[in-house]
Image 1 (cartoon, rainbow over the protein chains, first blue to last red):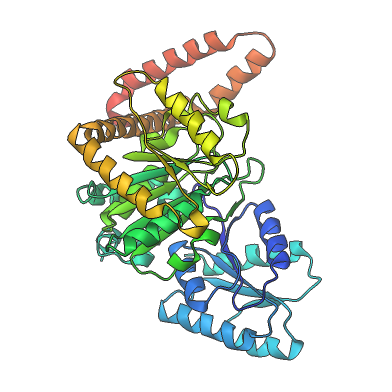
Image 2 (cartoon, each protein chain N blue to C red):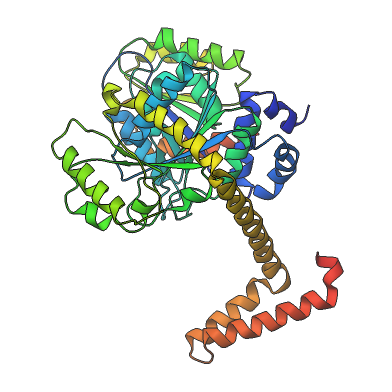
Length: 135
Length: 320
C-alpha cells in the first residue's frame, strides 16, 4: 500500500455525556499519523458498527464511563460478527472495573486501557496489533 | 464475485473497501474503476462549501433527512483536513449526522485531505464514481472549511451550495473574490442570529455587480439545527437542477470534469514516467547544483526535459 493510513473510529456508546477522555485519545492518535473518525456522544451499538464498516476502519476505540460496558461491548462484538467484520481491532477505555476486564477480553475486546494510561502505550498497541488484523 | 460487481449491488463492505483502495493505492483501484465507469453518470453531485463552523455538516444532514422522505438514496463524502506534519486527521463531520448512521440507503465516508490543497482530497472524484455506481441518486461533497480560494469543488460537482453565516463582519469582504463566485445557491445559515439580513444585503449587492447575463444565484435563509428553511432549500436545488439541465450547464460542467479527469490522470502517469526514466538520483543531483549556485532551476529543467524526451524516443514502445 503506497499511501495507507491507519483509520480509527473513536466511539462513545451509551448514555454518559463526557467525552474529554475520548477527545484526548483522538488527538493522540491524530498526532501519531492516524485518521480518526469521531462520531460524538451517545452512540448505539448499531450506529458504531455501521459507521465502522462504511468508514472501513482498522480499529474501533470504545470509550465508556456509564457502567453499561458489560451490556454494550458484547452487543457491539456480536454485531461485528454478524456483519463479518471481526477483522477490525477493538479496544476500549474508560471506567471499567478490573473484574470485568477478563470477561470483555473473552468476547473479543483486545485490550482495555483504564484511566491514567499513557497515550503512547495505546498508539504502540494499535501499531503492533494492526498488522495482524489488516487485510 | 469481483469488487466492482459487489459495489454495483450496493454491498456496503465492498464499497468501503474499494474507497480505501482508491485512497491508498490508486493504480490498483483502477481496474475496478474501469469496470464501474459505464454505470456512472446517473447521480446528481452537490458540492457544499463554506467557512469552518458555518454549518456545512448540519445542512448536509438536514438535506439528507429531507430527501430520504421522498426516497432518494444518498452518498456523502465529508472531507476534513489532514495534518501537514503527521498526516493524521480528526474526521468529525459525522458528529452532525448521527441519525443517518443506520439508514441503509445512506452511505457516508469521512476523508482526510492527505496533503491535497483546494478543499478536497485527490480521491474525491473516484469516490463520487463509486457512490454513483452503487446506485446513489444524490451525492453530497462536503468540503473542508474554506477561506477564499479553495474552489476545487466546482470541478467535481454539478451544483454548488455556498454556506455562509452572519457575524463574520468584514471577512465577508475578503471572501468576495474566489469562493463567493462559485455558489449556485447561497445558504445564509444560522439566520436567527443578528446580522443575517445585513449579510443577505451584502450578497445581493455583490450579485448585482455580476452584471447582465451572469448567474444570479438565489439566497436561502436557514437555521440548520432547527430544520428551518431546509424544505425551501431543497426546492430551490431541484429547480436549479432542472434549469441547468435545460440550459446545458450541467452537460458543460460534466464535460469540463471529464476533461480535467483525463488530463489529471495523464499528468499522474507522466509524473510516474519521470521518476521511472529520469530517476530520483538525477533529480537530487540537479537540486544540489542549484543550491550550490552551479546551475539555475530553469536550465536544470531544460536539461531534465531533454533527457526525458531522449529516453522516450529511444525506447518508447517499452515504456508506453
